[in-house]
Image (cartoon, rainbow, N blue to C red):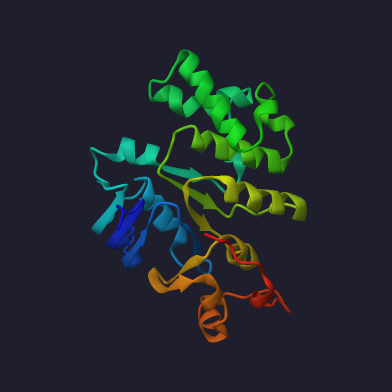
Length: 251
C-alpha cells in the first residue's frame, strides 16, 4: 500500500471556549483518490479542513500529508502540500492580474524567472485558463475565477487538493465543466460539499462527519442508497433524485 496522500489519525480538537469540535477523527486518502467530505452544517467539516494545512493543530492525534507530520516546524511545507481552494474565489484572488495571482505562492517559495513563468502557465493550462493570464481577475466570470483560484493552488504542486463547496453559485454548464476539470486533474482530491448529486457523480468514496465524528466512510453509491443513514445526519438528496441513474466516476 502506498503512503497516504493524507492520513488523519485519531485527531480531537476543542476551541478555547471548551466546545469539542472533533472527536477521534481517523481516515486515510491515498494518491489518486477523489473523496467527498459530507455532513450537515456545524458537523465539524470546516474545523477539520483547517487542520489539514496547519491553521489548527489537534489536541490529540496526528495529521500527515504524504508522510510528513504536521508540527510547528513542518507547517510551511504542509501548507504547500495541502492546496485549499476556498468556497469564494474572491477570497483567493487579490492581485492586479491573473499571472500575479498564480505566481504569488510559488514566488514566496523562491521560484523566479523563467521557472516561475513556466509554473504559472502550466497551472493555468491545467484549468483551461491560459488565455486570461494578463487579465484582472475581477473582469472574469464567477466560473472563470473559480478555475483561476484552482490554478493558484496547483502552482504550488500540492500533494492533495481540498475544494470547499466547489459548485456553490455555479450555473449548470459551469458545474458540468468543473466536474470535467476535476476529472482531468491528476491529483488527489478531497471535495467538501453539500451538493450530494455532484458528490455522487464526482467521487467514488465519501466520508460523512457529524457532531465532530466520522459516522460513515465508504462507496458513495452505497451511502446514498441508505436513506436512514442520510436522514439521521440531515443529508437530503433532491426530490425525485435516483442515485442509481447517475453515471459513476471510473476512479
